[in-house]
Length: 198
Image (cartoon, rainbow, N blue to C red; front, side, top):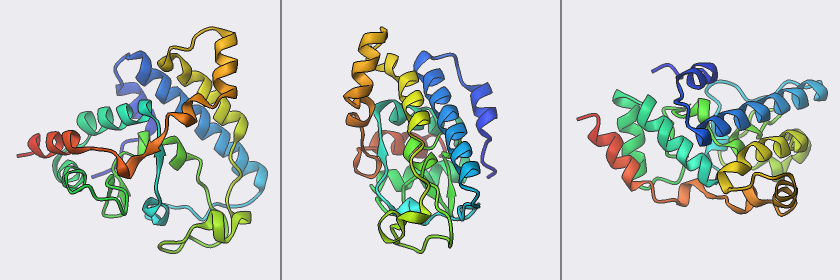
């Protein structure tokens, strides 16, 4: 099953304030990562079919959890939906339960942590942690883009005025909201995906 493009997901998304904010945050971070890669003068080793990083634990915030749920229920069909649903029901932690036959089933709305993890040099080996073994080959976090993305997400947390925004960013509100994707209870989503495809 071909993976939908980010642009097509943005166009198809209902006008839900939290979803609009999440899509905008993803777009901001993608642009920041692209600028960081261009400034490095290096070519990422990340490519289609490369998924060694999908065996790492993935931090994810509440709004991203909602986004993955929305994307899975509205865009996954047939074998892809069944494969993801079964992985979620089995509480598969490694690789990521959203990885199906080497393809990220939720790629257009993948977590922010996945979007900003770019490796240069040689492709990652299975089980390798390049941030530990060869940190010089990992793109430094695009801090400005990350802060801009987090700013767009703050209304989801009830933060709307400028003073509160500054305090929330200083206190790392979005980062403090993160949990590990593989350790969450995805049973309801897994059952829905399997049930929708019988």
